[in-house]
Length: 173
Image (cartoon, rainbow, N blue to C red; front, side, top):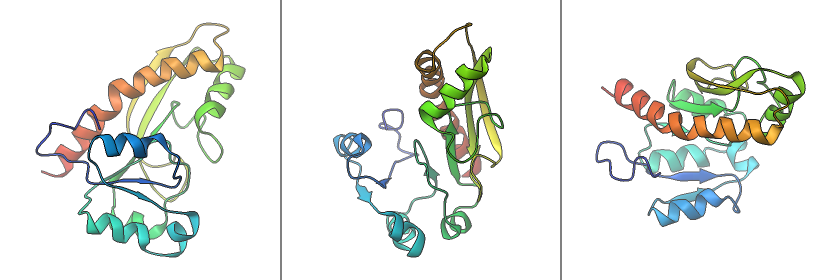
């Protein structure tokens, strides 16, 4: 939101959330961005979310911290226009149940010497869509999951808005 706030050519038209307590909803309101909250039933068994996206003329869907598989109606309506960020270097540490702290704990337990982020397009399976970008960070022996999370979060903040911008401007032209 901060990255795109002064852009005329790229506008965040809506923030959707599956939880009414998400801090992102408050942030969106502070930026004057409309919000919409939905539940699992409406997401999978109706066109409610798709209708809301179309009503707001959304051209892209950008996910951050969203853990549900995307239903077919959204995948078909936004082919190669749904982008996600994952807190590891896919294909490692991807798939169902591999999110947030779970990923960092697995990396720490394995004793990996690097981690990072993967920005990818979505398909019908968890973390298997086309990889668009990866960035790495070095890990020290004995780094805790919390230390790994901090290093990865730096990469997320540095790269995600820029890569989303590149995707939108490249594919929209």
